[in-house]
Length: 507
Image 1: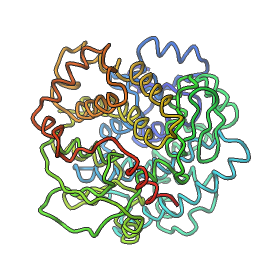
Image 2 (image 1 turned 45 degrees about the vertical axis):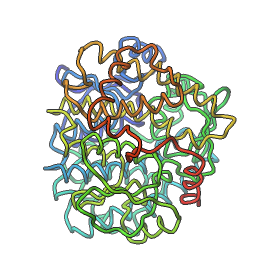
Image 3 (image 1 turned 30 degrees about the horizontal axis):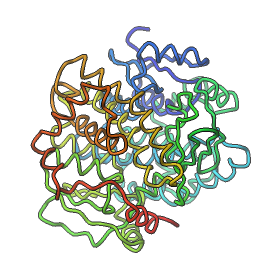
Image 4 (image 1 turned 180 degrees about the vertical axis):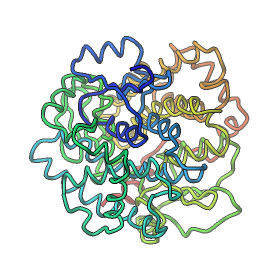
């Protein structure tokens, strides 16, 4: 019916389930179109509905939204489930980011072999009970309120309840040591809209079964035997990435054996989380500047450096060099989910890269003038982040795989991501991606362009709009300053950086 959001995805959970949960929690009715054939998917591609050739796709308020996080952020803000101010939104973003990491382990579970499912079940329970649930148990105990943020029902509450119920499907008594979370589960489950969604016959999807798995594989032409904690690809451009990196697996594998490239490392079982995990030197306030704690290299902190620099904000850094620094941070309770980047700003100790970037963008007016502009910025940023993930993993790939990995980066950049931004710039004829105003999306794109050019210098040869965009952005005073020698911008990762990462985070 007209006016209802319309959801395009498989008839199963995947990355769409959190969207169903949030719409239901807001009391919003929605329609669904289930993908059952490759032809349906290709029709969406050919019709230009999938910005980055990915589902989920949600039609809402005249927009065709992709990128799960962007969709959820828009729904949360539209229906007043996103806090009352920037700091509450920052907390919600951090909590949602942490919950997402946990759910990444669960998302890949249906695609595992029977043997590997038991291994992954143990990983899910271990991560839930040692890293994620203790963080939320402490939050609820410390503030003594019914909800996670501001004592108001929010996206963070919805997301956490969804995760709790999913983990309980793997181990029914997983909350036995968490009395605050037990009470939280009972409270949130009793909210009328949630209670309705939990009833039989709602649009909530059941635990994924073999039929769901077969449909996903058929539609997306997945060529992978998925293993517990990693994926092992077959044929050209095979892959071995850890489970948190697979958060997006069922959403954007688009039918190519090259979709994930080989990036084997000797890291532990949660590559994404462990690359983001870290320690700290003694924390103390220094002159009111934001304080960044990370390794002396790019990684997941580099977009934070870029965005602060673009906003003209000076910052200080603490570099992690030893395992002991990291362990001290965890022991001191500074890292909410035992992960870095860590940024101290405005009295907050922020973790979760996406949450940090969103806060900075909002604080320094780099996030659009209204909800729809912010939705566009979110979609563009998330697409660029997908491309940057390939570059992030590149230093950890073995020497014999690097050439193939460069080819994969080039293919993805020139066939999926850069054409989108070339078209956006050409169609609106403006200097910036959104609203003809400098935004977080512009910063993220110029960072990505330069990072890809380090691997493929002529990568923009077929993209005249992006060539001009690169020139414009590089000449903006704050960006130009950041690109000069001696700035806080970090060089491409070298062997010393890789060795430091492995030394600090390898278990």
